[in-house]
Image (tube, rainbow, N blue to C red; front, side, top):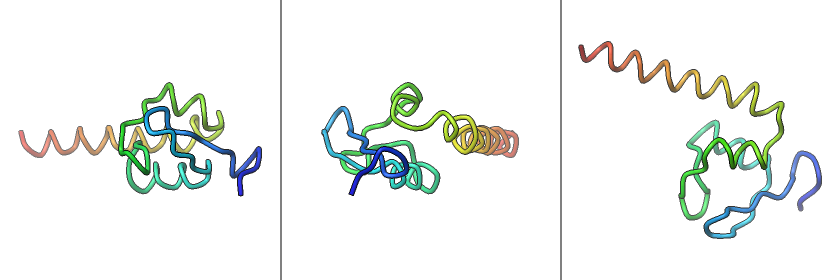
Length: 79
């Protein structure tokens, strides 16, 4: 059941499937920034419009930094 805080309803703009914010956050952290149903990529603009500022500025920012670091380290290893 959706509510206005932790289980806020989030709807994919492409397939119109609905998910709760808690499920979306967990999926983003553990898997990828894509729709759980149609797998279309969700950009930062969409995520910022549907998720909390706190999540975007803490957990999401840390996740993006880690992914960028992983890419950088991987590129250095290949050189």
